[in-house]
Length: 471
Image (cartoon, rainbow, N blue to C red; front, side, top):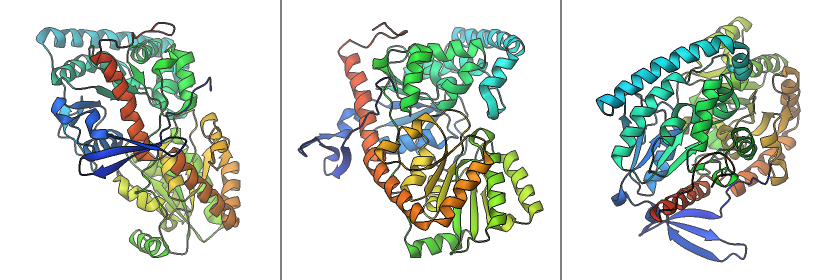
């Protein structure tokens, strides 16, 4: 992948009387130690995450950083009163922030952007439909442009040690406009593979955001190379890094715990459990999974299925529930409505025998797949360069063509009929995750990368941002 590798580390945060210490081993086994909390002490100011408060990802990141003693604020354009089941940090509402002139410019810009975008969505309709594919909805870039004025002004007023933007489409521009601050951006798969390609305006905004931050941390090696080639971002400002899986939370349940979890959710204890590990959305192969599961249920009576809901899945889950009822097999499916705490997902993953993720389009390395693999599920995933690149490192899965129900059904039968194959696959994946996807180690590495950016600012030598070839 054009020389890109994940930012690996052999460091783990260990609790000591002085705080969390990163213990690191080199190739000889020799160790060094440095205090993680000392990288960004709360006394030097907060750190800011720009992200959607309804998403668990900003809160996961905040929880981890707060455990190191960092003062973390989540800033968004959503109301601070939004209710989420996984809140881990103060959510600050930046709507309407800024001077009267700045707000007036934002409103004018929004009106102009909406007119331009409406015209482009007509003249570039075919392009937009091709770009989003199974996602069906075309996200509009107009509002993120308007929100960037208030968000960037609000963040700069907080005088944080750095700003970390999550999602290039929604928060990339706001992150890029936090001039004078160390700016780190985590682009998601939809940002670079789908939405940036919908219209020329969306492409312009996302490209500008990617080029104007100090560090990009995509969760995929393949995406790192794609961002460099497609958007012209210099390689030295791209560092692929995955969050991986929390190995304490995601692990295989023992027999007694399995029986308790199955009883809690009404699953027969002796069932073979198949779980769709991502939200029930068309883009993530929801209908393909459902059709394969229904056909598999007809072929085998000893199987129980788990489908995850969450934001945006309400209509799809309702249709699925009706379809299963009409088929007379609704009692063999557990459909979880709404957003659920990560601990609840971890419980269900710990008893799942087979995990399924059927993404249609190219994407970042899925945290859900890593988590299910850590919890001991044999995996069925869509064919793609990212997960294929992990096979030499020990990752094992049945790879299926996107949208191909027959291949999914065949893989389900193969795993169901061969317990030894499931066991070998699960054990190999656990070893892989422990070595390459350890949540704690990867978070230490992320903070080390961010600290490097901040040091350059303190020395008055930040990287010059812009297109590839400039430094």
